[in-house]
Picture 1 (cartoon, one colour):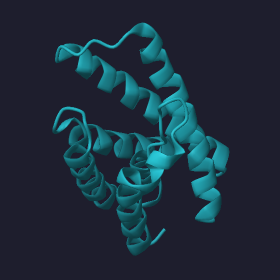
Picture 2 (cartoon, rainbow, N blue to C red; picture 1 turned 180 degrees about the vertical axis):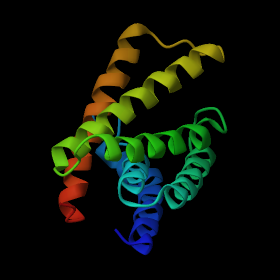
Picture 3 (tube, rainbow, N blue to C red; picture 1 turned 120 degrees about the horizontal axis):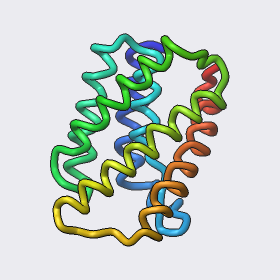
Length: 154
């Protein structure tokens, strides 16, 4: 993918995440378009470029998010690195494999964010924890399949 297309994707994901996506909540969760765009950047761009956009997207998410400031700026580049590393190790030729990678990144992101909330003194019940990890990750992965089709990524 071209850099301009990735830049447009990350920018669109950031804008949509704080506006339109709120209308697509299911059981109080919404897909993480920013995470999807960061994983795509890690898969299809060189690592320096993907990291730059991941840091930008993480800072944007921290500014408009409710979590602790700075955690997304640290985590999103990690998911971009995970995607780039995975692309070298496994075949990511089909969208289902890419969606599985998004699911893994979303699950790890949810686990780390929940542990971070617990550490800062905001405990999360086990039921909510499991709902966030499984449903949020699954919803994000399913939306990523739609995004891959819409972007004509093959």
